[in-house]
Image 1 (cartoon, rainbow, N blue to C red):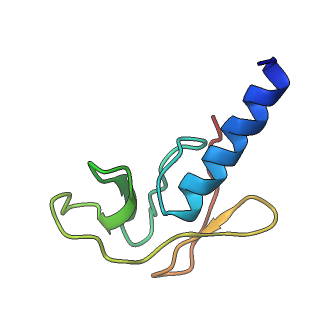
Image 2 (image 1 turned 90 degrees about the horizontal axis):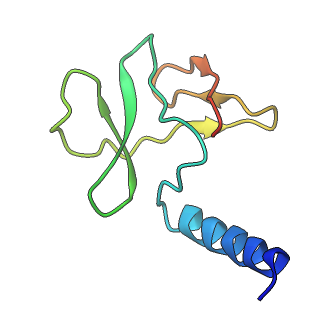
Length: 86
């Protein structure tokens, strides 16, 4: 198998993982400096959010939304954030 085929397969797996709600590690986790909502990764790989000062709290179900320009919006307070991509 050539490198191009492997890259295509990897991208397909990454997209499938994202569709399933998994964190595929293409960017840093987000944290809102305004309201304290932050992303985390559950033991099963799912992307979750919780309050910054309560890391053992259950998933809030809220998700940061990505805009076409690559920035993210906090679902709680609407603060616009930038992410560092890996």
